[in-house]
Image (cartoon, rainbow, N blue to C red):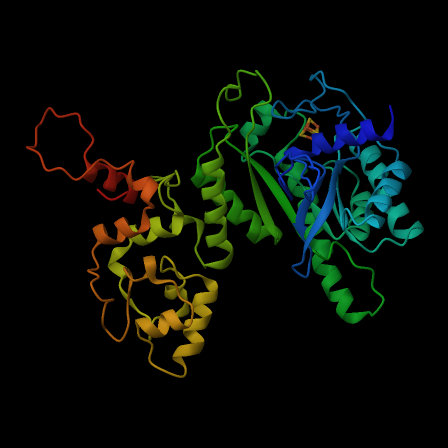
Amino acid sequence: MDLFDKLRILSDAAKYDAACTSSGVDRDGKGGQLGNAAACGICHSFSADGRCVSLLKVLMSNACIYNCAYCLNRVSNDVPRATFAPRELADLTIHFYRRNYIEGLFLSSGVVKSPDYTCEKMIETLRILREEYGFRGYIHAKAIPGADDLLLNRLGRLSDRMSVNIELPSQQSLDKLAPDKSKSAILRPMGLLRDGIKENCTDLIRYRHAEPFAPAGQSTQMIVGATPESDYQILQLTAALYQKFSLKRVFFSAYIPVSDNPLLPARTISPPLLREHRLYQADWLLRFYGFSANEILDEKHPILNPLIDPKCNWAINNMALFPVEVNTAPRELLLRVPGIGVNSTMRILRARRETKLDFSGLRRIGVVLKRAQYFITCQGKTAQGVRITPDNALNALISDSQKQRLPSQNYEQLSLFSDQITREDVVKCISGQI
Ligand code: SF4
């Protein structure tokens, strides 16, 4: 098999890993126009200093000995297999880098022979890159659960970011769909990476020549929609992972049906992309807005609202806290106003040190009021023509396309036997209020 075939197979096999984002688009170049795009192969990620870098996203091998039901590379699946030799992959990366196609490498792998064997091959690839070619570009490497601690440590010294995929949200689901994996085998390397990164931070301060260990931190990926766990369970787990393992990111990956296994959703079911999107929004609230997982969802309301984002949903359910006075509200409460993000909050806090803010002042400092005006007052006054009521607020939060999904507000005689869904029912359904 020539190198191009290997690259085609192994970059395609890597596209299901959401821990960094592929372009997701296939578009050929055209005469007289500029550029093309490939759904797999080159992806984007963020380095430790926040730069967006393009990476060669590839597997070391897709010849996996495990049989995870949700994975295209499972041993029982009849797909073409390929494995890079470490030097082959290192040379390829360097050639791509020199041609300016990529700025770094995202390297994962199926488990070939054993976790240790696979990890050794990955280490050898990165060693050639770092030590022989002196490559100082960004490298994101997947830790192989079950590999020896010393090997993971070595991999961490050669990489900028590492990740261990948690894959499924519970041990029961792992037992069913990925019998070769266990939660403890996945969490163990996460703990090891956390300790290594923490220790390394101290070393880097103390010793000028300390060797960095995964300086861009660690991340993980969770498949959403392959198993019955609710959004509530997924968010609880996400919050616990951030807390216990100091993860930089938890990536959610909507399950793409790749198998006829009766334990999995049918192939005809589309990937739950909206759910994935809502989970990312909720994840944002956990990381930047000071929300706890229990505030976003609870056992009685375990599913994220598909019609409005989780922050708006929370605001509608907590209308008693609004309106807030922008000139006196604490940062934590400003952050919870729909339409006011982290940057706008910062601008408000800075501006109000100098002056009393009114609505035109908010506009001048760049705060978008379209939604926020239903939740705030300025110097005790509401925005002109705005009446703050839960109904008005809800109206402002739902997009025009979503409004079309609401039944129109036609008044009709109530009937005990009517089975029509009313607008009020939908509003209750959205806000979770009875
Ligand atoms: S170990 Fe990874 S590559 Fe192998 S079958 Fe499971 S998910 Fe796929």
